[in-house]
Image (cartoon, rainbow, N blue to C red; front, side):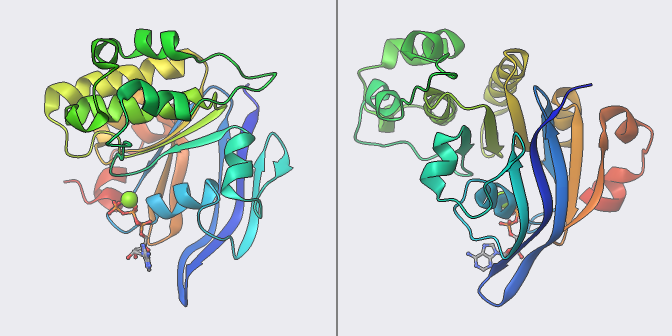
Length: 237
Ligand SMILES: Nc1ncnc2c1ncn2[C@@H]1O[C@H](COP(=O)(O)OP(=O)(O)OP(=O)(O)O)[C@@H](O)[C@H]1O
Ligand SMILES: [Mg+2]
């Protein structure tokens, strides 16, 4: 059985006076893809931002390979191998495609797998456009570029926040295909995904949040055994 690469334990997070995450606990296994689901406002983005160090932890622990990083800076969390592709895909619009990738490059002794040529072979559409400004790319290409930028940091954990939001169906398929290739490369991934059937096609494990609390967590086969889950927690009928 795979070991836990990331452990979130009894996490509480506030926006000012507003208590948004309530004792959230879950684990990501090495090489697994975990689908983080829940209705709008459930706390998915808040969880991803907190794991990336961009929101302060009120209490609880977050451990990467056993080491608590709950109070580290976003820079040090990124250096230790956790990379976020935020909701809303923002490229550096005035930089070229290749410059967007190069500025994100980070190699470490134990993680040096990704470079420009490997990114271009993962996302072939980017290579012929490498000297174009990032702002000239289509929505799908911009999504590939922001994922490529995260990969240039040679992450061991990749956090993806609704990568398919607002993309045309064919492009969504392409992005999902790339995500499954990344999983096959052995990357550990937390994917925030609204589409339950997409999540079921990609994920090994599921966490469903409901108003900032874990409403369900389990493996793909445990999800299959509970056909009422989607109606209960995701508002799908
Ligand atoms: N900057 C903020 N200040 C105050 N409250 C916020 C802020 N951002 C989010 N919230 C609140 O925190 C809760 C969780 O929001 P979050 O964005 O994490 O949800 P989400 O599950 O990602 O939703 P969506 O599916 O719409 O992206 C919501 O009640 C939201 O209104
Ligand atoms: Mg969100």
